[in-house]
Amino acid sequence: MPTFVSDYAQLMRFDRPVGTLLLLWPTLAALWLAANGTPSIDLIIIFTIGTVVMRAAGCVINDYADRNIDLHVERTRDRPLAAHRVSETEALLLLAVLLAIAALLIVFLNPLTRWMALGGVAVAAFYPLMKRLTYLPQVVLGIAFSWGILLAFTSIEGRLPEQAWLLFIASLVWIVAYDTLYAMVDRDDDLKIGVKSTAILFGSADRLMIGVLQLATLVTLILLGLNLGYGTPFYLAVLVTGALFGYQQQLIRDRDRAGCFKAFRNNVWVGFAWFIGIVVELEVVPRLNDLPG
Image 1 (spheres, rainbow, N blue to C red):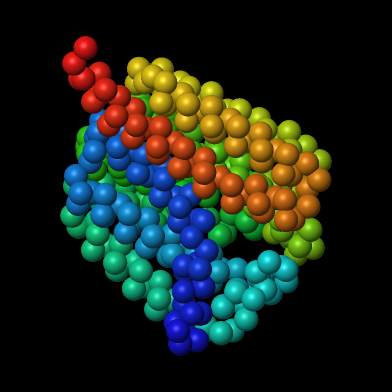
Image 2 (cartoon, rainbow, N blue to C red):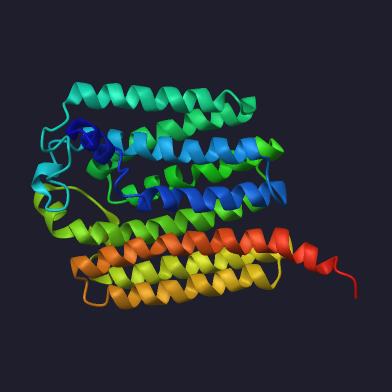
């Protein structure tokens, strides 16, 4: 692979798919939930490509905004923009291409979803500034990462019912929890350079606050299941989510960087559990109930 291609891929985090999966699983779960079963193949394709493209665009926006900060953080100092392997002009051109692809995708969606998508881009663009203005940038990231859930509902139902907001809130609180884990990795560097985060805000109460957020996620998921009248498959997914949260608490017990980063990455399985639980609830259970006898 040519070096410049590799650098562009790293700038878009194509070499690190964890962030894309963290976005994708809840978005697909919302599609299935909104459709009350398998959504149309065109929506699956649009939302899958859109998730990949917008996550890549978000990474470019973030790295461009942080290009003078990343040099001073151990984990980010070798990023293509910070290390000057990609120029600022190249990064902006790449961002323009990604946003053009996203714009092309939303043409195939209804008017409400198009306007909602523009709002999501605005939230994603605003996120890097929040690290300089507030200790709660994780909340803004949670809104941005959960935006696809709202788009899934408006693209299918043309509205945002109660279930959409319950899943959105569960996702938002969960993201604040796992991005706090991510921020714990960089906390020492962030304190030196003045970057703000919930990891710094929570201080020595970080594990407790993450636990509270994880508990709030579980409660909201249970409320969602009750609202929808879901059964065993969905609640098994909630149980798996709780077990994974417990495992993450064990990983961060010493607050070392490796453990915190491993706990952050483990959240891919949380999102996957949600997706599988909803798909089984909507696709498998009805078929089993229709079996004779």
